[in-house]
Image (tube, rainbow, N blue to C red; front, side):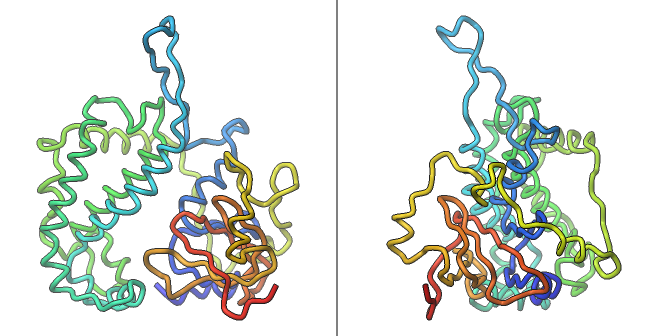
Length: 336
């Protein structure tokens, strides 16, 4: 919820959504790009984990029983971005208790979406969204009906499992009123909803495959170490540490973009006036379009755009956005 003084004052970042990642003074917005940056700068071959584990060997006719590996990274990214983060997210959001929309959170989201939200009408749509959840679970069940398998046939969970799990976990919890105190900044009490409407369709009897996968993933996560450290931003010298951190360079020192399968295709962007030095606006293509980030274009590639914000914060930063789900346009009055 706006305002976000820590991000705005420190980095000049007016972006509304979460999450935001900083690697030094390079700021990455949106999960889809954050994942790719983490995978690139903290690779598996350097001892870090990965959300793109290798697929299990798949045997087939004529392969001598040795099996073959297959490239699935694109499939996983599409599953997370085009299914889970869009229609499934809209469905789970539709399970939010109607009382939430009567708080300051509801007023804020009205501004974010661009029209007034009616708590009574949204409450009346919960049965429709339950039907939509039932549809999503029905589509997922055949993939997960064999116990011990992940969404993609990998030895360990991938981004597909991670993205699907958090969306279902959040949807089930919010439908039961869990987390509403934080969601509304104290506007309504925690657990102020009777029962959990999501359980009507998401249960072991109706969808045993999804149910078993869901709890197997929870069990797997519990085996991992917790590297999180929570710090008090008001007392530690983290800003001084960031100021002394050089801007990020890629491994060969020639670019600041996360690599993509094909090289740049600048002629397409030049047709729209998108070249380094112009002032551009970057905004999501769904909600939050009225709060664009405006900045000088530093670099633009097939999947990523990098700007220096016009609204200066306390330190010089570069802000990275994915192009997937975002619109990049030359700002009015921009000069080359």
